[in-house]
Length: 73
Image (cartoon, rainbow, N blue to C red):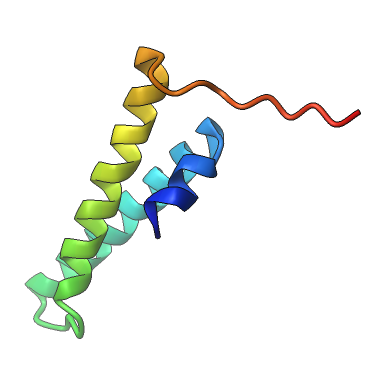
């Protein structure tokens, strides 16, 4: 997932994506332990994506990034 896409997501969406990625990383590590992993580079990609999501969430927490309000008039 690209950084721009992460920045456009809401806090709830980011938290859901983070939980999903952490679960996927656990599954990949389990497959690696059983030597059934087809794409070892996917572990690295997921770890980077998790770090990017955590960074964006922290920016919201610190007030660096403002929460977007969706006002449609």
